[in-house]
Image 1 (tube, rainbow, N blue to C red):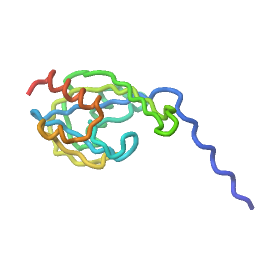
Image 2 (tube, rainbow, N blue to C red):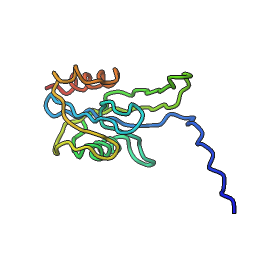
Image 3 (spheres, helix red, strand yellow):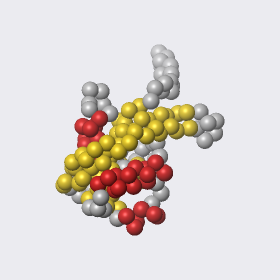
Image 4 (cartoon, one colour):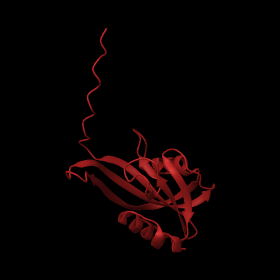
Amino acid sequence: MTEPPPPAPAAPPTRPVPAVGVVCLRGADVLLIRRGTPPRLGDWSIPGGRIEWGERAADAALRELREETGVTAELAGLLDVVDGVFRSRTDGQVWGHYVLIDYAARWTAGEPAAGDDAAEARFFAPDELADVPLWDETRRIIDLARSRLGP
């Protein structure tokens, strides 16, 4: 008896993927996760992820925050919508396109603990962020949340 052939590789996506991010502030400190999966594997980022079928973006934001960090928060408003377009370093082809709907939130409970696809989770004081490798858009979104929510 012969083995069936392996499945064909999945075709690259042809549409952007809707996703959410949450800038969760506890006073002036911001909650970040170290990414445990691509894109940006190993980088620090705000918690977030894909919106599930039938799920409201705001609900997805709070779910992702809870799943990745164990923290709960109250959403304080929409910050921005950011395109995350990722290209191959070798040929420049687009391999991922995420439409990131980013929210500001105020921490309400819980101590950060990495969960789901996060490798690490913790709050960072403002003076610690200068030494943390962050995507420029993430840094901009954090600054925007701080300016809107205040200290």
